[in-house]
Amino acid sequence: MRLVVGLGNPGRRYRGTRHNVGFEVVERLARRWGVRFRAEGQAEVAQAEVGGEPVLLAKPLTFMNLSGQAVAELVRRWGLAPNQVLVVYDDMDLPVGAIRVRARGTAGGHRGMASVLEGLGTLEIPRVRVGIGRPGSDAVDHVLSRFEPAERAQVEEAVERAADAVEVALRDGIHRAMDRFNRRTAPAAAG
Image: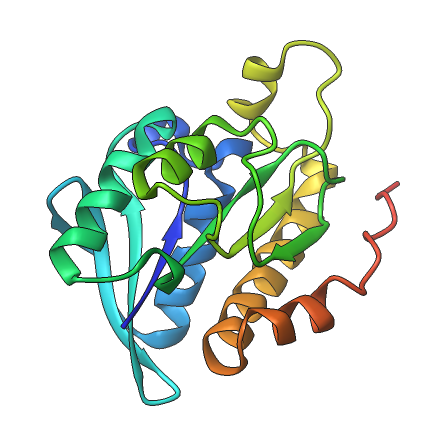
């Protein structure tokens, strides 16, 4: 079994915000695979099969900065190893619409990912990062804001490509996903 976790904040208030792009990716995968989310502990989960292998999609019900609690609980409950987890989340260091796939690494200042790394006790967590752009001022206001109308098409394309990257990582491995998706340049700015 593999666990694909999208990071975000629960509740209507945060739906569509930059910080919730990880949720958008796992929701896109759930629609593709025809599965529905249900509550399980500190997360909403949906079970699927990809390439003949079981996959669990998850959206933590903890807030972003406590995501590691929900992820660690799922890893324990399902008897998974940390390297069976793939995390999808937003990244301010990437332009809007860009995605990057990595096999491991630090959190790079992302508190949700830092919580996951702490909860699982390793940096060896594959991840797909989706660019939300650099803030003009306050980072907290930026991540909790919604995308500008001009950015939305780029974000939709990025969510689609990130979902594709997750599928490639699940079927062919994280390094194949890195080779395929990290070569692409960021889309040109709309306007």
